[in-house]
Image (cartoon, rainbow, N blue to C red; front, side):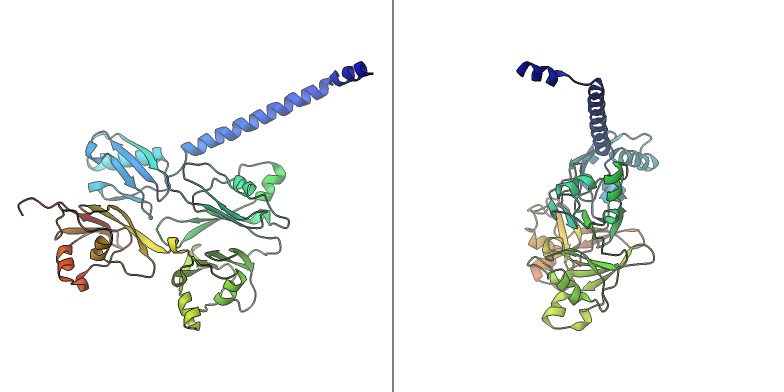
Length: 398
């Protein structure tokens, strides 16, 4: 009896063997395709605001250094000025810089670029998934939309998988975002992942429910208890929208809220909303009507900024300084707040380099030393997004 069982257990149909080999081969091909796709994604990754690039120019070694990519997608490329480089691959950016150098300075230029530090930021997955939440993410990682949803337990029952949205910051340091709509349900049903999307730091993935009709909902994001899509109803306004989202939480920057309303151009018009005035002073002018398609964004404190400036040269602390959305930041006070000048600073010749609205370059020279010594802060200069502050070295003997 035992021998008979052994013999029967060893009999394997040739058809089953063929099917097993075919299945293993398919799995191998699928795995190879996935790994190949990941390698391609790494090679073709585009430069993102917040990345730091190590750029080397063979013909001009003094330009070889690390360049931060600003919020508007530009780098301050030394004497050449600000150049837009975001959304290019590393090879495209290198080719672009070579062309700029060859058109203006060198007969032939050789440029190499690598990312010395990747921008980081959590991916937020909300809506009709099994376990909504944040996924830690850094720019040198590879994660697709399908993977992010899978990490959150997959689509929940009743999810509108054909209308999954990726909301992504646009370069510029403002509140503008682009929205991509992806049919995840079709991917699950057909196993065709050609329309899957690679995610970026600070992307928001939103999975609406089947009951939410396209165009009849609004979206609440940021520092609220339950961010996500909500069905539009008559007389919807800021107060009702916040209540539907469970209220603002402790990290909310109440005076920096924004209502983003779809524009005919395809972007969004930004309407400032001061929730301190609405809730604290009962200023009902802040209780703005919410319309279908609107996005109400209440930023947490760490995101409530209108841009950034760059502090360089003879200062105690070099680097990026964030500009809050609701406060005017000035030159002298910024230098003072970040530790002041170094002992070799020329305090009377501080330069602000900025780009005017018409695209022209401007340089302002400010005697910050006099302002700090006399307390004449009425002469201080307000800073603007993407200003570059340069404190030169004092020439000994002067």
